[in-house]
Image (cartoon, rainbow, N blue to C red; front, side, top):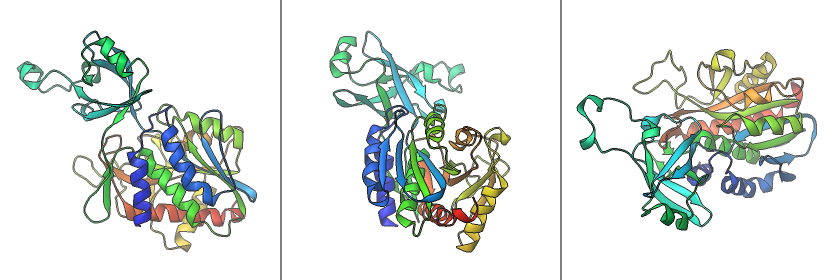
Length: 349
């Protein structure tokens, strides 16, 4: 488990907001090279690692990007205003330390707003919106900011490091979806006697519209696909089981449908393949019927004439925050399920 934990730590601590996934891609390319026959980066920026074989062809997708910010403009006093890249809940942004990724290197900044002492009493219980926040990175004025390399379009990510918690749990930023990337890399390590052609695709810009999955699936046109991602749990205060029946520590989540069916309704053949694989290998798993978000699978399964697609997700607390929490045991079992499923995919498709 220590090797997998080290991998997740490096991926979590790497920075790659949507559209700027290069540093993450370089880590992954080095990791997968021993386990595949060919590696390429397509025009969109997706990393496609191919394990040659016969029929069928299976696409395994994990998105590399994380949610972040982008500098919109710098005002005359040297404070940056920003837009959100991906789905932030504004309350989780306030007073965070951030990293601005300039052409000259990294600059640290903090997300500021009006101090509580200056907020009117009637406004103290209101949520402070992102529009009312700014990034303070120590510039004296706009000209000083330009000398530091900060300008419109500068990507921004959270400055939060990976840490172990009690038992087998860990916390860090960007587990959505560096956990899926680690899962897919570990699955490639574990695969044995694979007859199928395997496309391990590390996609870009999932958080802003499943973009990399759309283009890569169209180009590869696989016979079947599995997307990896994270999913919310219903096992902590503030959420009820009716909101999510998934629990940490009980194995990977296998999606039946998500987004109330507007995202994907997984074909019965794909569910049979994944469930029978889990049963044959004594891998615990949880079936998920979700009403919230969706994954790369929603784009993949609608490509060309349609691609049978499933989803294997990591039960993860506090998704889309810099302090997500997951179980390393769940991550190990998720990778094992993917590896064993690929080894027998030719029996089902």
